[in-house]
Amino acid sequence: MKRVGILTSGGDCQGLNSAIRGIAKGLYEYYGKNVEIYGIVDGYRGLIHGEYRLMQPEDFSGILTRGGTILGTSRQPFKLMRVVDEETSIDKVAEMKKHYAQMKLDCLAILGGNGTHKTANMLSEEGLNVVTLPKTIDNDIWGTDVTFGFQSAVDIATHVIDCIHTTATSHGRVFIVECMGHKAGWLTLNAGIAGGADIILIPEIPYDINKVIECIKNRTKSGKTFSILAVAEGAVSKEIAEMPKKQKKEAIANLMYPSISYKIAHEIEEATGQETRVTVPGHFQRGGSPDAYDRYITTLFGAAAAKLIIKEKYGFMTGMVDGKVVPVPLSEVAGKLKEVPTNSKIIKAAKDIGISFGD
Ligand code: F6P
Image (cartoon, rainbow, N blue to C red):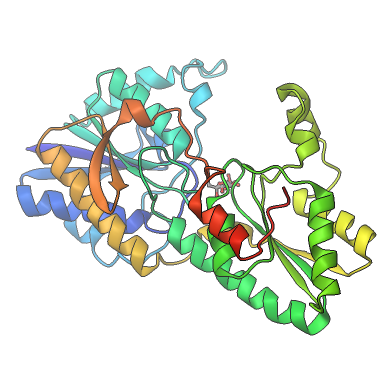
């Protein structure tokens, strides 16, 4: 009997259930009744506390289009994994290993983002058999061209910008649509381009507020009555970006506004006199059904993960490189961030059609 655990960890996104389905179908197809699949509840939290359940084949039916995760998820910071809980004296790593052994697992399939991959790599180094799948709307996992959840989030953020366009035009206002992404600007960049934003601000390219204002004033001069900005929640001004690390952290933490977009909106309104509004779609971007592309790649990723398990090829993430699903060593993925390269062709093309990045 083969025994496989599945867990989803970190912030949820579209496509988690379709990926789970892909893994389960691949395993049932190969092993028939000779496989048991254990669903770990709420990610690493369930593995730490021994909360899991034996899944049945019907649990994986009808979930291709369902948003969220049927297993539940939670955030368990990697930096605390090795810290023994003072109150409960729980050694998290030892507990995870204990419950893995208790389920008599041959392998654990882990679906998650960057933090999740650091812990997955640690578990692999601790001797557990692990395969992973790259999940996040941020698209910032190293070793894969694309993560699942990303495209669905781009679709939603683009739809928001589309809707904002009509009201911005009617009122002749400046609008900021704030997209998720603290460290990487992929979502803002892609939705900004797809939605026809005039200015795109991402963490990788610190902005100069004077350049942003100049761009809006130039649009007004040329007869444009409105302007749309797509701003990543992690967008940062040149001034702050140049600060030493500690000071920079403090400056971001002590922002006097609900988020950076509100500060930018205030500065634009002051300098241009034009009414400026902020729209924050927030977790809306992570919700609902996966789009067709995410259903497609999660099914491929799920099938590939099942293949790795069948071949007992552990310690790999299923990545997508140049349109092909490939195994990427976990040790190479963990701890790296895939940022938008500032010399990327996408940015060049956007600048070529007049989109400003505030630099
Ligand atoms: O990592 C995915 C993500 O949606 C980020 O884009 C966002 O900054 C963060 O999670 C929000 O986290 P939480 O759901 O914990 O508020």
